[in-house]
Image 1: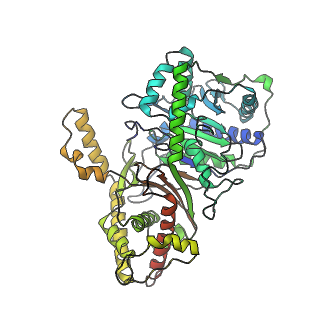
Image 2: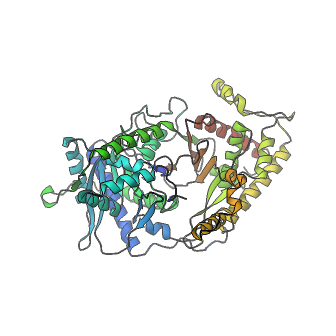
Image 3: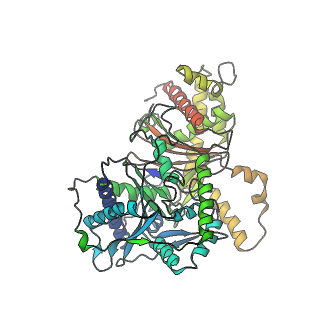
Length: 566
């Protein structure tokens, strides 16, 4: 699903995660936080090297089944290598006693920074702090660095050809090896402009704000850095984990998706962030004379390489300009109310997404929701298909008034401008409730089938790939127009729960579609909505407003249920 896709990684594949913002008043604050975070990651890697991660177990539906932990063990050892026909995932061997390093990127400069030695163990937080201060102090005095990181934002086949050309030089090969072997990349960024895709002018802002930067602005920084004129080149998109620390306190990550699903990344990050909050005294820098300065990586580049970087800059900027991304916090209620309605929050939100889409388009489309299959060895995900016949019948009824006429989306903008409360005429409330219950049951059944390994998509995928490997004719099923339509996911969704007030989002998977991740909180729901500006039929702003109306419609409907505990 990932390694055979030649599309550029930023926007199209790599998700971005926004951490709870920090308060930095100086570069020392940024270096102190980054050092403490890296110490936490190295401590985690030591547990991984001992193969000592506790085995997770299923918490529902045949509770207690062990879950495959392979994704956790790949997370800090993997690197995606571009190929001309398909990419490869390179995974280093896990060993307890080995040297470890990270790569620090700052204003496009790259530094190799040791974080653990095979004989002396992990580098201290004070030493890391001193090294990061050295980098932050040195970079402003250096000549402008070439934006080599931009090359990893290109189409995979294009980047593969350029990488082969770079590798002709021994110094470049060493740099590429350093990047491939790093635990992670630490990106020391400058803030995005406050007017970069700022939604605060168009809606009431909830959640975190740093200065005049809203959460949508922060998410853009994690997804693509803001383009070539901001931090877009201060990245190495092939690396599984890129930690972003901006000088204004906005922090997060961009991660390459092929080694792992979001659950492993989020658990690693949140464990480390909780340790960063511990009440330890502020670390003081070590005497610089006792340290070796971090190794600055320099590249040998010809005119073809500079031409490739210029082309990569244009392509990335075009992709950034085309991305319609919106972090929307629904503040009306959250999973506490939904649970009181005796409905799974995930099932409830999936139906809300179906209703929101139907209100805008008067139809449903193939919908992808990821379902973990970690009950099986090396299991990743299968596809929960939420656009069911039962969901269609329910949303159709929800959008009819008492006369049977269609109502809803056409008047949303007018209602929003006038500030009037959206309300709907009653149309046989019991029928709506009955159809809702049927849609809930169907969605729940499909979800259970998938997590227990009885879905359809990965089985079909396996049959298709076997035919290719055996060099047999591709079965007619996979060439049928219906199969193509069924796999054109105009709604690509995923629940991404976090224990901290953070969130993760990603781009759409088709040109005329939406990406929709969601994070249900106790009394709110965070949605990360994405689409492409080049598609006239999509708008995250309109989708968010339709979603808000849909969630209130559902609340009103369920509140009318007799003896409803909610």
